[in-house]
Image (spheres, rainbow, N blue to C red):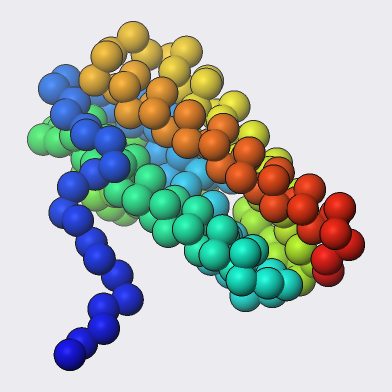
Length: 190
């Protein structure tokens, strides 16, 4: 008998069905993939920090949220793909994505909205659970803020639905990290 570590359902946590190509919005949305407050940094941050959590409660929470962030990468990537699908070279140039096209064509690549590639310097792990959880709460607040800015930049309901859902998950993650932070602080767990 094989014991699988992952059970993968081939569906997104939130359905994405964007009907209208929108390269200008894709150029902004990509920051939630590879930008300073994006989902890729969140997933890596939490999945790395979990190893130095002082107990199974902390390890489990960071594993749960870290793997959920991987699912959020899938949502953002699907949105980007649908927003850029079948874009011509001319359309990419007009949207300010000529440099993206030169290196990646229409492929999804983790950058911020300015085209700066993802870097692990976007996150840290200190080995101090209170310091790391403080960073995690701040990261969730930054991601929430960026989602709110993105929401302000569109009126397309096909884009708004996933963005509103992802924004709400940032709020939930913040609350879960705050609960763990308070528990460790109150019980002087290091």
